[in-house]
Image 1 (cartoon, rainbow, N blue to C red):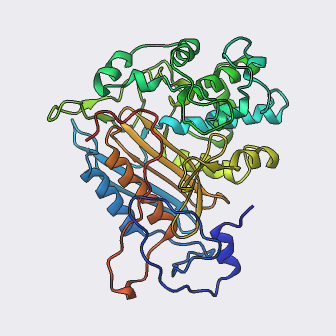
Image 2 (cartoon, one colour):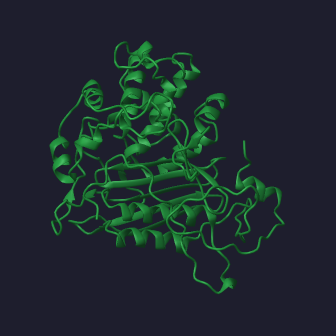
Image 3 (tube, rainbow, N blue to C red):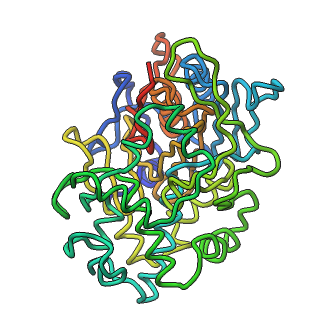
Length: 419
């Protein structure tokens, strides 16, 4: 396993690197083999300090791209740093608040994976056993294993592509609808398979609907109870919940907004919805502090055994550029400064989320914007990762700092309606 950038910097504290060029602005970069030639600002333990100016600018770029509001919360050796731009509620004009709850979309997949991998640790589920062994007759191919679900290599089509072909009409058709897991799987099976099992990565919400079914079959409990007992209560996550099929985000929360497909039409408030179309693939609610606590606890080994955590963070490329990676319910991004961060992205109607941490769990970032069908806003929000984890370039260069912005990861929802 590679040493993280933080550990290498700690071992070579006297190193001050020469200035590197700014990375291109629409791609993530594979980590270099050696310590990058980049000057660093260090915190109390030698970790790179976040560039708060660049972090704020990434949020401004996000609202300029159409999000009503955006926020980021960084946790590291120097403490907690939060930045906000814009509003959390257009009707009242209430400012964005880093303490507020929001829908986290596919970050739910990491919660679901942790529960399932705990069942692997307990000997109740085997990663390389056929899904049909546990759920007889559910899938059309006995070769699809539990591991194939978690790393998106099952070949099961993503039913949301057809469900949300048009943004607002698709959303309104399911806003208050309640699906069974089986109904969602059946929608997938009406579509052609995308690949043979294990052959290629293809992101699909269907995989994690089946994960929810596996959790409930193995435990005899609803997923909400398993999230609560195995993660939420264990970590003291006071603002995290799974309310399906309830529609309300209780307490202080952020409103989500969709841009209609018709040019010039007003934004649609999408805050209240069942998210039954996603369930264990994307229906959880949380806030920035809880997500950072969760990701840090996961990567520092507080939720899984070393053996199973190693399996989770063993990643493979998700495209031909070797710039993005996926393990078991977990993404890895390699930033321009050489730091690798682990976590997940989330997209659910009205909300974009990034929740990432370093391999040792010491530094974490949660960023979110209250829109979901503006790809430009999602890309801009990704710029918070470079600002938070790579730090500031020295002012001595005499050049204005640019942002190395990650290209957006796969969406929970198709991007139709974006312009």
